[in-house]
Length: 64
Image (tube, rainbow, N blue to C red; front, side, top):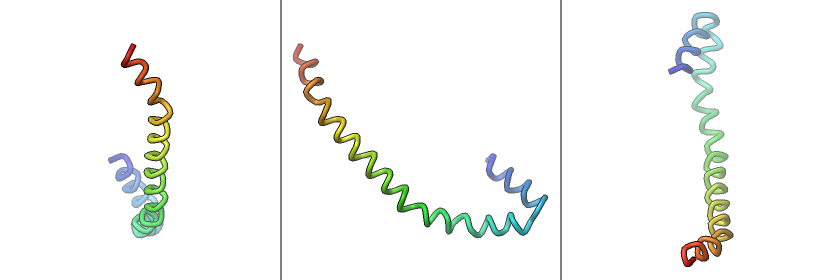
């Protein structure tokens, strides 16, 4: 909502820049989508590695 209000303010102050931003926003989002997906994959791999590293401690804690 705050972003929309900022865009409305920009539209009142300088409408050509606001319209250019409105057109370019989906293109930038599509360009950044692969990087977001790579970040999700890296986060998942790091969580898996952390779970494997901490597995012996969790097993010992559950036995004791």
